[in-house]
Length: 508
Image (cartoon, rainbow, N blue to C red; front, side, top):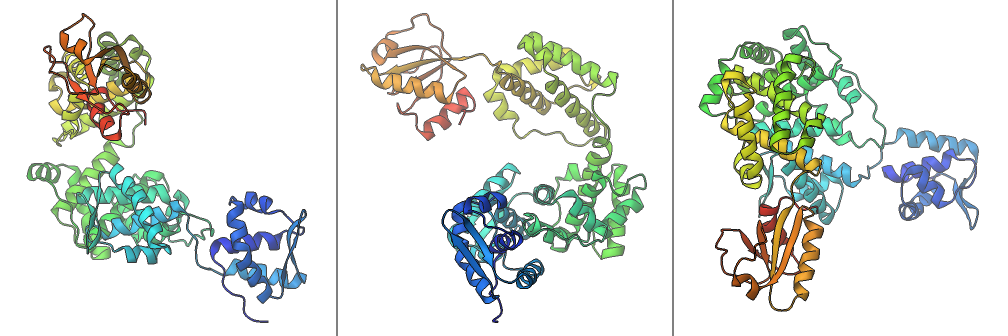
């Protein structure tokens, strides 16, 4: 008997299923049991049949009955055992490949990665890898990183080193089950099942020496529980910092921020952790990375441990803030418990940063003020009226954050007032009603108060209030300063992007 030809991981799953079943099954039943499509099962059956023949078995088929394996029981049992021991080539799903691609791109950042390298890593064609890279690109954007395609060089992840580290941390937490991380930190070798999608990222974490970094943490922060989730999170962060430093990547801070972190009392703990990393692993941690560890510990120790909402003194200013928001914006805000929880958590974090002189910045402040001018104005008045931070005062950038929470509550509960829109068209009205239907479908927050011809519009005001003018033809500027946007009657993608700056986010 010749040696069986290798099967990939998907084919091995189908073969194991058939070998484990005593009777025939339809293709539909096999696909359902293995969570595959019938097309995938049928496509892989010829390879499985060849594999079975080389092992002295046959694949039986009968219309209306199903598929089964024919042959001696001892051969079936031996082949089933061999399949359990073999590690054939893995067939990765789209989600698998995206996670592996992200692990490679982030670990190499800011060095380029060639598509050919990803083809080898993912075991997929160039076209498939390109699709996976697009999915990875969207993930990176959501984590404040950018994927740059450099002709002749490759793919490069762009962004601050601190965001690359956070990206690696988020990727591992998303892809690797906690029990696998715990076993790696404990020095155990956890056997992952063949279909475990985390294998690619788990192999990355296996290189981080989580056990040594957990020991450092437990030695320097003796109050920590070695098995709790927070300890594993901090361990993982330290191990990622060590790997990045060894690759020549160090954190960067502005001089004032660096000094405030280095002078912070928690920096003493971070310094002891850095010294231990040098002693045990030869990782030389400079001032900027001690500052990065300090910043992490500030969020982890001072903010991450205590539940929100247990202290009446802490909730009292939140209650006053929400009550004022209900008066200024909408009465229903008074009943939004999620708004209360979000504000309480944010306010507690803000107090920590202000107490230790850490910078408060909101990169979206300008955009938020432009998109929600009415809410921003209300947030400014409420902050001055309630003074949630006491005599400290609310930093200007913080008004932007308060606006985001209030606007989010209004949008979530559909409490935003309708935006009044005038639609202008040429003399014929057919294009106008196409545009009206598209506007209402894409921007449900819009109220089309009137539809007029260009001649009627330019004749002068008719007493109907409007917030935005949307026209299919160029028009004279409104004397009252009402913004006007010229769009296609079909409301194409570029038109939606322009309108969203005035009307808010579209529904799709």
